[in-house]
Length: 167
Image (cartoon, rainbow, N blue to C red):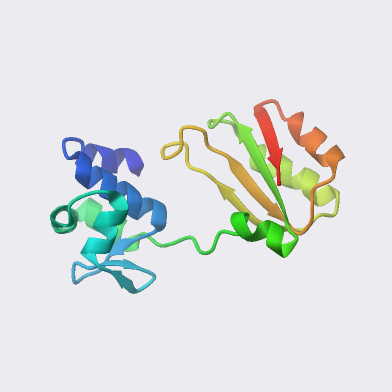
């Protein structure tokens, strides 16, 4: 999907910057031409400021999206993923495990979660960052309590895992 969006806005860096922000935050374009997040309208000046672009670019971007059937489909169906617990996990008493692995690796999520489950640690949330958006993508696993050291050691044996951080 991202490659299509990049190609569509390839010669329009400000519009691409806005499109990227919209995808990352789960913003969509409704049938009235408004940028919305979960049904809440985001005013042009607010999103322009967040993207670091002129507010007029927001209208131009929306018009370009609405004028292309594929972009209209992508941006009308984009949704926010919900609350992300990473920053508040310590306050809630949860553990945070960040796993860095080769982005093209297969099976890292299944093996890591299997090791965590075998240790009897409930998983609250998982986020795998998209390598198209993040040059150093992470698998972030929020657990109900800290993951024991032996589980971390097992996860480090997964061939494509490069590094693990705990918080």
